[in-house]
Length: 323
Image 1 (cartoon, rainbow, N blue to C red):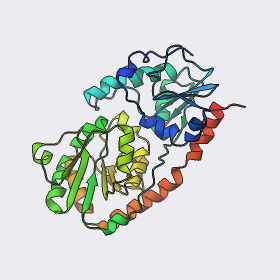
Image 2 (tube, one colour):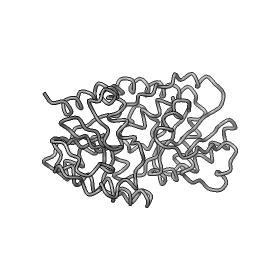
Image 3 (spheres, rainbow, N blue to C red):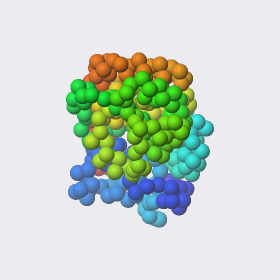
Image 4 (cartoon, one colour):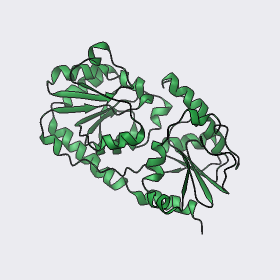
C-alpha cells in the first residue's frame, strides 16, 4: 500500500510542472499550509503532511521510497479510457490515470471524487469504497458582468484538448453565428482544429498553448458573453464536475451546454445534441442580450455560494492533521 504506484517511473514524461486538479482541489484553498511548511509539495499532484500523503489523479514524479502512514486519493475524471476522447488522451489515460486509480482506489484510506457520477462509478467498481464528493475552488474573482452593456459579442470554447471531438459538434454553430452577427468573435485554443474557412477567419481568435499557471493569469483578464460547452454522450463527459460553470463565471459568460448533462440545470441554456440544434440555439440566443445577462447573473450567484475554500479545508484538515 505505501509503495509507489505503477505510474511513478513513466509519469514524469507525460505530465506538466503544475496540475489544475491539485490547484482547484487543494492548493487554492490551503495555500497557507504550504507557505507555513505544514504541508510539503512532493510532486505536481502529491502533497504530504507528517502523517498523510494526498494524491491527486496519480503520483507521477514522486521520489523513490517516499511514503506516509495515511493515503488520501482524489480523482476528478472518469479513469477508464473513453473511446470518444482523442487518441492521445486515451493513451495518457491508460498510462497514468487508469493505472493510478485502479491501484489507489481499493487501497487508499480515503477516496474523493468530483461528481456524483464518479461517486457512482467508484461504488460499482469498488463496492467497499465510500468516495466523498468535493467541489473545486477557484481563487480567481468572478466577472462583474459590466461587459453585457458593451458592444460586440464575445463567444468562447474553453475546453481542453480532451474535448476536441466535442468541439466538432458546434462548428456549424460557430460558422452560422459569425455570419449572422457582424460583431461576434469566437475564441479558442490553438491546440484545437477548425475547418479551413474558420481557421483564417478574421473574427476567430486563436490562443497560444498555455500551461495551467499561464492560463490562470490569462483568464482573469477575459470577458465573454457566451461559453460553448458541448458534451458528446459518454462516460467521461457524464462525469464532469461543476468546474466549467465556475470557470464560466470567472469570465462572466452564459453557458450553452448539452441538455443531457445534469449539473447545469437552471444555470445554463440546454441544447439538444446535433450540429443543427447547436447552430439554431446559438443564433437565437445571440440576439437576446437580456437573457444572456440574466443567466450569467444566476450562475454567478450559485457559484459564489458553492465556491468556498472552507468546504475543502475542513476535509483536508482532518486527513492531514489528525488529532
